[in-house]
Amino acid sequence: MAWGEFGSVVCLFLLTHALPVRPPLRPWLVARLGTQGFTLAYSVLSLAMLAWLIAAAGRAPFVPLWEKASWQRHLPILAMLPACLILGLAIARLNPFSFGGTSNVAFDPAHPGIIRRMRHPLLVALAIWTGAHLVANGDLAHALLFGLFLIFALVGMRMIDRRRQRDMGARWHALVVAMAAGPIWPRPVNQGRALLRLCLGLGLYGLLLTLHPAVIGVSPWP
Image (cartoon, rainbow, N blue to C red; front, side, top):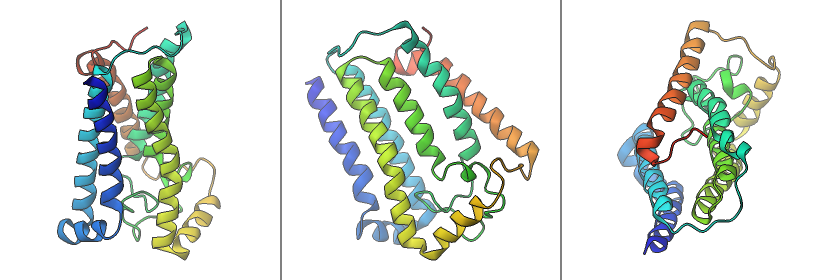
């Protein structure tokens, strides 16, 4: 029964991520919810499906795949720090390259922030999270779970790039060239705001470490 739940949730997760962004469903939803409303609804649905999928993986039968080494237990703790800092720097930032294409007109390629280094920072953070947890967990259910997310993050970057290039046309290439012409590590326009974002990332890191035993049922500490 537990494997049946896990397989069903995997299928639902894929469907709820693929169908809403395909024509003609996406234009129909955007026309009724608005662009921001559609992005918000899609994000809430994604988080709900993610929580259900993680819970289902925990309830699936334990099938060991490899022996765990001591260094594997430390990997998620080390990897989640840069992942959380990336999230802190990326959340609510103008990003015309992202899934929602937030504020194409207002985006300034001369001051792109973290977008200068990665067009899809949220997916980069997801790839770091899943890759670290894939190595640290040695059972079949979690290998399928984190392997799926890792593929989703890596393939998603290419798929979103193609979709945004098609939607934005020549502007997509113009923005990429403009950002490439700037410094490798651009100076923040507002250093106080950048510091606040880093503090938010650190706060998220601490919150995840604190809530992990209660929410996931496993201590993150080796």
